[in-house]
Image (cartoon, rainbow, N blue to C red):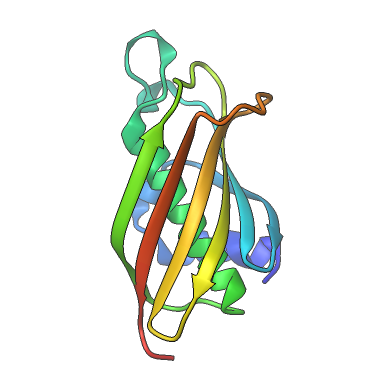
Length: 136
C-alpha cells in the first residue's frame, strides 16, 4: 500500500469526524505507518493542550491503516480493545502517531502506536489495540 492509497482510504472509509482531524499519511512501509494530525485549537483543552480523545482517535486510525497496509489493502475490522497511556501533554504542536502491527492473524490483529509532539523524540503516549477482522 502506498501513501496515496492510504490517504485515499482515510478519505473514503473513515467517519466524517475522523476526517475532520485533518490527518495526513507521512510514511508507510508494510505493517508500519506514520500519521500526522495538524495542531488545531478545536482539539485542545485550555492552554493549547491537545485533548486525549483526539490522540486516541489518531492512534486507532493509524493502527487500522497499518493493518490494512500489512493486509495489502482495505479490510473491514472493528476495534475490540484499546489501551492508551498518556506520558506527557502535547501543547501547541502537531501530533505524530507511529503505528506498527504486532500480529496479523486470520480473524484478529494486534497493533501498537507511539504518540509524539512533532520535533520531540520523547514519547507523549503509547496505545495498544486488538481488532476483529472480517473474513476476507
